[in-house]
Image: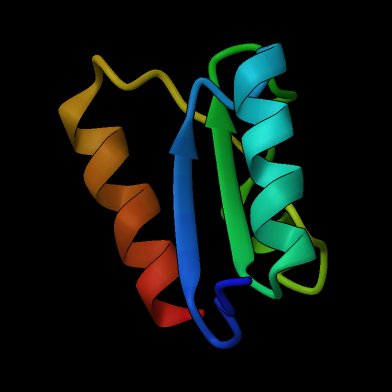
Length: 77
């Protein structure tokens, strides 16, 4: 089995069944999962806990500026 320990996986469309199952598989293999979806509850960045796994972040991937902000947030944490 592949080990993703200390790896970060970024998933878009995380609110859907396939993406949720994918996130679970990566978590089982020790990855840190960042799951994004437009249906997730919007939160301020300072309210997002990177202790959770998966970390769920509201994101509309058509908003390029917001995508860049989320990627910066993930890289800093």
